[in-house]
Length: 256
Image (spheres, rainbow, N blue to C red):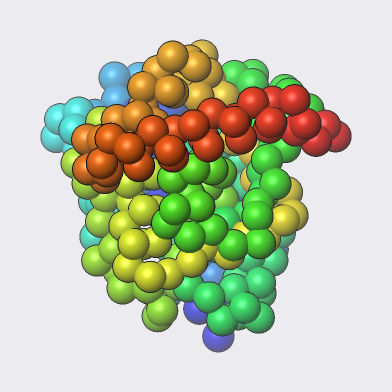
């Protein structure tokens, strides 16, 4: 029997998107999965929608937080409830291509790696393609990720037979908790191997960090100084490289 994949999904007021995210999981060609949705005290119909779907598909599980604690707490609760060998991440507003799990697991088995990320395309708030794709490098290490923030949650998968599950526990941060987690894994000596096939759609919503350039830049600097506690000179070095690569990606990012 194929090994189970645990899909980590936090949600908060996601009624507009959550059905599409779930449908993209249900459409996977790899069928041995569990989708663990932890709702972060939504005030809309998110929980009701998930509960209705879960009645027809027992692989979908919904848990509700007693208060709004942020994505890190929700993801950690989801991780606690998980039972699969593989852990993959899908936020409530993102979408997977049908062969995402199957191709990524095959890739990881061939590479004998415990940490990987696929390429992805960017869509807008309404699901329209922005004709932008982000292509993964062959591999990314700790310094590489600091200077080239390519890894996106929607493309990440971890094999817990190789990477200790303790490294997947996210620090309790309101922002950049996902990036801080990938850095935890990289600092532990694991590389992230890139599968350069577009297998996911990352939604750039009006409220997302990536849609606000000033907040995004502040977030990167805070990651260096406040989370990773890098020295000022090394932070400046990483930031300059990050900025140069960001400009390069904007000018030369491949269009479909």
